[in-house]
Length: 123
Image (cartoon, rainbow, N blue to C red; front, side, top):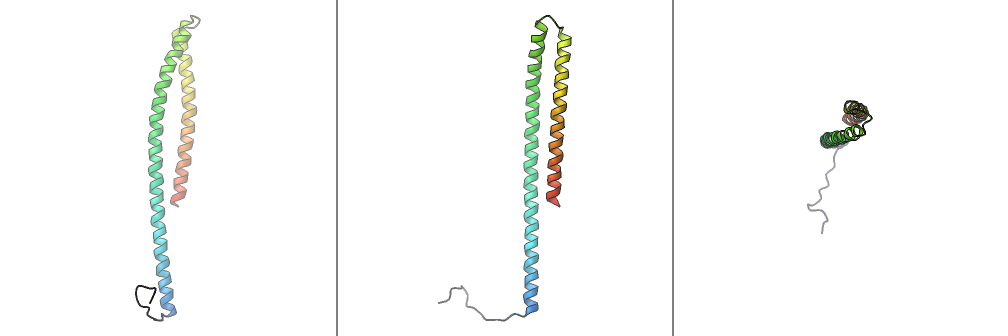
């Protein structure tokens, strides 16, 4: 009884036919690899886009918390009676501008590095 589902035929192929088949199979393999790479890049891009959306939502929530916290700090500083409300608000605003600049720079650095990774993956 044969192990193969079809009876074996002992046909001999010529070397040029075998080489053609090898190149055909190699071409198929390369095409499959290209398609797999495209799919991986697409998935990574989608993951990057989702992360960016969550980052924006997180930054918006952090902004709300910071604004509320800033208002509380202004109220506490102004209630001490040593500094006016306008001066305390200006101090808090300058602090937030400095923090926003630092975090904005960090975010831009991460975005540029992610773009470089995606560009490298495409090449």
